[in-house]
Image (cartoon, rainbow, N blue to C red; front, top):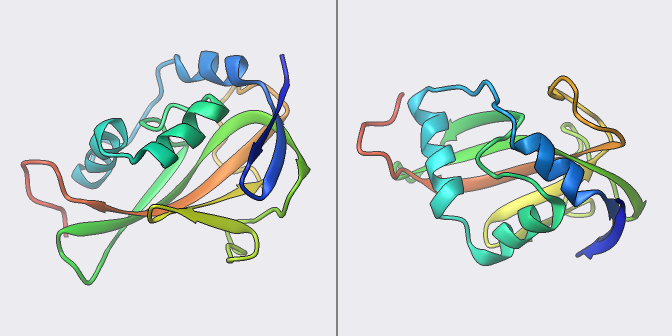
Amino acid sequence: MMHQIKIEKWTLKVDIEKTKEFYKKEFDSCRCPDCRNYYMAASSELKPAISNIFSHLGINPVKPAHLSAYPTENSDFLLYNGHYHFVGKVLKGPLCTTDHFTEENTIELDDFNLGISEELLFVPEGFPEPILQLEFEIKVPWILHEKKSN
């Protein structure tokens, strides 16, 4: 069932239960050290404001649809960007795209930059409609015991 919620700049109609149900499925995910570091951080290191966003949308933060990692000036961190999907519609608020990710169409919460997009990439097969994409960028510390890939 669709519920109206407000997240910062956006008023959304979302179906949290349908989204949660889909995220219970097994996903093929990259097992490289960079991605495993993100999954571990997403399961235990996210700040409450970020976790609340995922919770309000029904998203499992350990299961991004797409994830890329980049080195930063501080070698103890990686910059990640990617996206998640959720069941919903934008009622009000600016949309971003992968190529147009600006201060006007995104927000920053505790070093987590996010935007909402109708541009859909890497949607898992069978994801329920209507689909929105949460685009994100975040710096994450290296927390795995093994060394980072170069």
